[in-house]
Amino acid sequence: MSTPAPGGFGVNHGALDKAHATLSNLAHDCPGAGQVADDATGTAVAGLKGWDSAGALKDSLDEWHQQVQALTGRLNANAAAMQSTGANYRATNQSIAQSLQVP
Image (cartoon, rainbow, N blue to C red; front, side, top):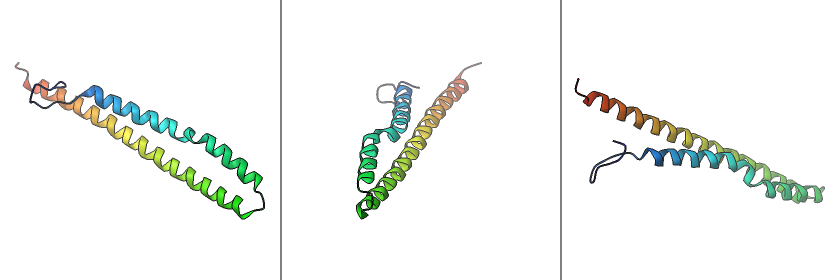
């Protein structure tokens, strides 16, 4: 059942596995992707010490980190769901195949 017959229904397990891996990799890479901006913003905050702009930059950087953390969490949740979906399809396929076997 993993490869659909022409005009039939099937699940491409490789595609599910690839989607899970992609989501996992995105979640893993997400926090570090903005490191250059983090460093530059930190330098700007230090350079503007004593100015209102420094506080505003710091606040925006804090908000950025919260948003990246939220995105990472969503990506991890989606990766886990994709992995569960793949496992459920495999288990269902095996169960159906076993139930259709003639003793």
